[in-house]
Structures are given as structure tokens and as C-alpha cells.
Image (tube, rainbow, N blue to C red; front, side, top):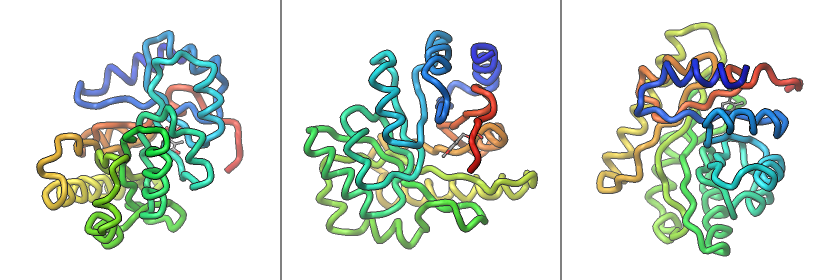
Length: 223
Ligand SMILES: *Cc1c(COP(=O)(O)O)cnc(C)c1O
């Protein structure tokens, strides 16, 4: 099933879009099945779960952290994480930079923006982003690379609303690119779109889509 699901989704994605297989809560055997079908990029949202999976699965997997990251958990993922999608505060970025320095790494990060109508979703707003990117502290950070932006749309059937929110994230990307990252080719990623809305996200310029249940089936937990 996982193999067929992956094949179907890949067939719908343009070459410019990278599929992050969101494997949170799923057993290692499911990830191995996806790996055997050629998938190499996995997304997780709990630091310890990601570390444990990293330890037992093939070493050429690229691990993307997509959930809210607590500063006291950063140390578990910094040695191996490929991309952190969810930088939602200046403090978190500073803490990631500090930990990355200890490991002599430069860690790729995305700035997460609050684009949904729901109050609960984490993320920066534009004022906070400008404050962060204009700060002296940011200019001193040598062990992180900002590679783009990430956002989650409102959980709704209203396709027009979802599209509007993705357009907004694309505008945020374009604004930041022009003001801060015009010369930096690594600033190129727009992470948006999940199982129910990734086709819209792709139309609106996503470069990374984060798809879980459409690949692995529904998750068994209540949140
Ligand atoms: C769980 C999760 C996803 C994937 O959700 P699905 O609806 O199962 O595709 C994508 N992004 C984030 C940030 C998530 O937490």
C-alpha cells in the first residue's frame, strides 16, 4: 500500500517539488517500506521519536523536523537533522545555532509563518520576521542557514481560503527574498501543503510538500 501511495503521489508532483514523507507516529517498518520504494526524505515532529528512528534506519535518509521544537530537545536532533521546517521564534533559532556550533555543523532551517486563521498554529508574523532578520544577533549566527519559509493552512474544506493562505506564504517568501536573501541561492524553499491540500500548494508555488496520511494511512492518536 505504502509503495502504491507513494507512486501515485509522486506521479502528480512536478519535478521542482520535493516530497517529504511525514512518518510521525508510524512504526519503523512503515518507514522501511517507503525507503524500499525509493523514499529518502522523512518528516517527524517529535525530537526523540526522530532520533530513535534515525538510529535504526538506513543512514542515507534525510530527516526533516516539521513540528514545534522545544529548546531542550534540540540536542537530540542536531547531529543528523537535514532541515528544520519550524523555526517559530528568534530564541529557537539562536538555540539551534548554538547547538549546531557545538557539533561544528551549519543546519538548514525554514522560518515558520502563521498563515492560518486558527489561533493554535505556531509561527512568526511579518513584524517578528523583520525584527529577527534585522537583528545583530541574527547576523552573528554562523551555524544556521535560512533556506526559506514554511506554513500550514487552516484546516477547512474551503478551498478558496486555503489557496489564499498559500498565496500569502508565497508573498512572504518573495518579500523576504528581495529584502534579505536576494544574493543567497540557498533561500529557495516554500514548504506548504499536506495530504488534503498539497495539490493547491503545488499550484501556488510549493517546493516542499509534507504528506503523511495519504502515504502511510490515518494516524492512531487523538490530538
Ligand atoms: C502531520 C503533519 C503533516 C502531514 O499531515 P497529513 O495530513 O497526514 O499529510 C504535515 N505538516 C506538519 C507540520 C504536520 O505536523
